[in-house]
Length: 264
Image (spheres, rainbow, N blue to C red):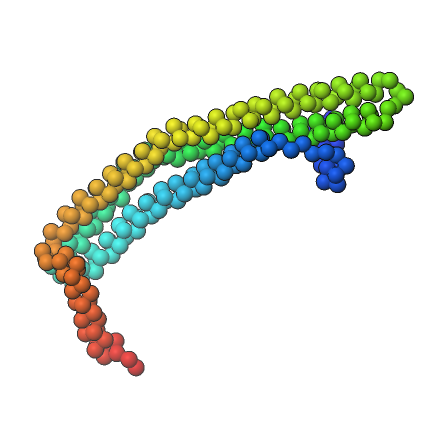
């Protein structure tokens, strides 16, 4: 930081302290405060959306990968009992189905998801540091303006014998006011425009996400339907009627009656 920059920072820190103690009037710009509040909410939502979108992508990948490991274990489990049984054939078909789903996620969904969702979110969030820098500069110029206004008022209230002090204070006030109002007006004008653009900007990403979810669900349903042919036709009806729970409980009871599973 240059010596001039250091002096400005020191002066602004002093102005902030004097404002807190009520010795310098603080400018209250409700219009800007309202626009900044809406902008901060948008910034927070976009950052959360980017995190959630990344977590969704990771969860989809983790689900199919875990499902593939589960299918591999089930095939080993059923194959060790009887490779020709309906269960063994179903577990093999299940493994093939989830491997295709896992490969499809990596091949067909991850690239489009990154391009249509993650990259637009990243680009939007990349604007926030730039906007925040302008807001920070605006706030610094406001401190300079408040300090110059206070100095001018004191010079008017307590005239100096030096005839150059009042014109100098007036000029400093006018310059500070002009710089502040220029930045303030720009932000008040452009922050709402940024928020208004969020809907047309994110519309394609939202549509892409829905289409990709539909594609994944349709492919999953299609592949899992092929596995169902290895089960008896009455399995679905038994499940709906609650009979499968009774069957599972009956097998568990038989297991409890075994000596190695019984209570000590």
